[in-house]
Image 1 (cartoon, helix red, strand yellow):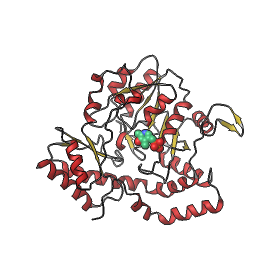
Image 2 (image 1 turned 60 degrees about the vertical axis):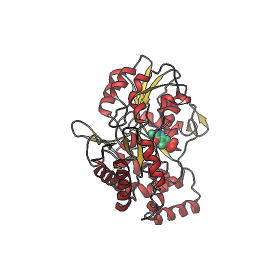
Image 3 (image 1 turned 45 degrees about the vertical axis):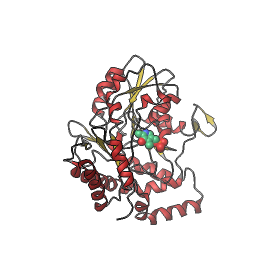
Image 4 (image 1 turned 90 degrees about the vertical axis):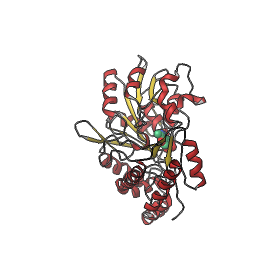
Length: 378
Ligand SMILES: *Cc1c(COP(=O)(O)O)cnc(C)c1O
C-alpha cells in the first residue's frame, strides 16, 4: 500500500499530464499569461457546466466573496448573517468591508447553517445571508431563498467546498449550488473538488447587471480602459490556472463520483461503531453531496485520542474546524450568547475529517476504517 495522503494531487495530475503540460507550453510560447484565451475558454466551459449565465473568474475564493459583497453595494453597518462553523474567509471579508458579521449556529446533522437561527438573527439592518455548502453538501437553499425573499435580503452562496453539487428542491428540480442565490462564490484552491495549481476563484450570477458590475470590480473598477467608475480590486485568474481547470472540468463529475464512492465505503464500515456518527446525506441523489471532506463526529470525548492514534499509524486527518468563529479572537462580539451556539461549540470538539480525494484505493480505505474501528472497540 502506498503512503496514505489527505489529498493526492500528484496521482490526479498523472492522468491529465499530457493536456496540462502541452497547454502550459502553449501559454509560454504565446506569452498569454494574463487574460489569455484559456481564461475565456474556462469561463465559457464553466458557464455551460453550471448552467449559469455568467461566470466571472477571479484570483481566489476569498476575493470572490469580498467582490460579491462589493458588487451588491453592501455598506458599513449592514448586517450579514453567516454560519459560525466554516472556514474563516467567509466572515473575514464581511469584517474587512466594515460590514457587521452576524454568526449563527448550524445544524448538527449536516453542519450547515441552521435556518431557524437565521430567522432569529434577522434585524432591520440585515442585508444578506451567506450560506456555506460545507464539506460538499448543499445548505437548505429552498428555505434560505424563501426567508431572503420575505425580508428582501441578498443571498451569497459560499460554494468553495461544493462545486458540482446539485441542490435538490422538494419538487425534484435540481440546480447546481452557487447558481441559486443572487451570487455564488467559489475557490479553485488546489485541494478543492475542482482545484488549480495555485490560487483561483470565480463568481457566478444569472443577473446581467450584476455580472457587468462585477467584471469591472475585479479589474480596478474599469469598464473602459483607464476610466475608473467604481473602487475595484485587482483579482484575476491567470492563464496557467485556467488551463489546469480546463483540463479538469470535464472530469469533475467523475472526481465527485470517486469522492462519493469513498465516502460510502467509509460510512458502511463505520455503520455499527458506537462512538461514531457518519455524515448524513440529506437527499441521496447522484451529486447531492460531493464530499469535499468526509467528516465524522466522534462521541464521548474520544476525538482527540482517536486523532493521536491516527497520527501514530501515519493516517492523515484534519480537524475542520477546531474553534467556532464566534470564539476566535478576531471575530468575538459581546452580543454573542453562548447558548445560541450549542451545536458549533459541541461539534468543534467532535469532528474529524479523514483522507478524501479522487485517488483513494480500496485497501487504503480498509486500512483506515479498520484502524479506527479497532481503536474505538478496544
Ligand atoms: C477555501 C474556502 C474559501 C476561500 O478560498 P481561497 O481560494 O482559499 O481564498 C472560502 N470559503 C470556504 C468555505 C472555503 O472552504
